[in-house]
Length: 300
Image 1 (spheres, rainbow, N blue to C red):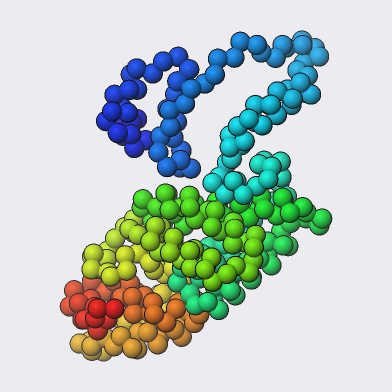
Image 2 (image 1 turned 90 degrees about the vertical axis):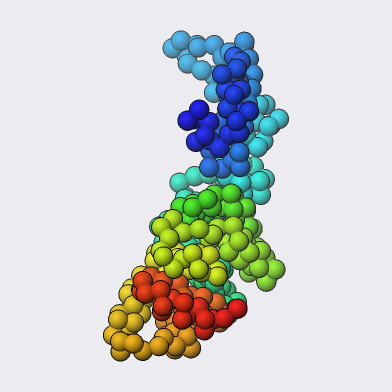
């Protein structure tokens, strides 16, 4: 029962676990949207151990090619592998995402979700330049695509881990990211799709909500941006809150100006009021202050 619940199985699916037949298994991973019932084919003819000669590499390769040729999706490690013309033939140590690439990938995700068009292009251009430098000289289009897919998986996993119940949106996001980087610069429509997926399916519920989060009109759009990517700037803004005169009414316009001064194109103008509220939630537990700022935001 505990295993079934952990895999997100329905009651009828859990009832079937005790009736699994020989060769049947239930599998689940973060890359699957729901548990899958699989049947492992009975294989009677096996490769013969040749003793000192060992296995015949060519025979093994021929049999594997025959199996995977009929079922190419078996080789997909990530959802974006569907974009590849020959899955897992380009995978090597030369196209593994570096820490610098992953950092730039998260920076691009943040700009795509919350930044201006110019901010998103700047972050993407910086990332694309690093992608080109990471690949060895003479790398094929397939190797580049593989790097895009791997980086999309790494950055999506890093971002999704910060939010609860974000893994389903993460599967869709991986493919959108790999497509955007392969066809750089992307269209505004492609970036719009990225933003919608990020804000509607990823940045939904914070893992450790604060008291004011329940009243936030924009769920958890800014939690990762403030707490993970720009903690030093946030600390400075928090300190300015603490230094202000006691009893002074918070000005939404002044908060917006402060945020714009710190982050520029990384935060779109329309998002500044909600970013200000998120920052205040992390800086103050006074309900009167939170309600006062919400009233200034109004029905936006």
